[in-house]
Length: 101
Image 1 (tube, one colour):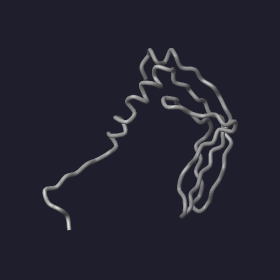
Image 2: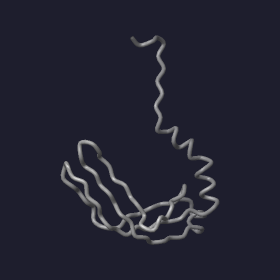
Image 3: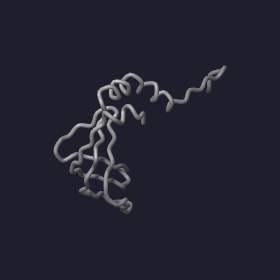
């Protein structure tokens, strides 16, 4: 993180619910802020509490506290302007001379 951007950041602590699914139909984790707070580009979220593991075939919800570090206006604009370029790093392209059958 750029030190100049760090000067313009602010933090807030909020309640949240972590929903974890470990089933055949769904595998994932979702975070919901209890008071409807929205996270914007450039913001960082840190969920507090011990790591959790749930057995296969189950879904569980956990109540936690989360700290949201808000990006400043300049950092948010920079993230919006360059975010597509960062996304392209995840793409892999391959070209061949002949068609695959």
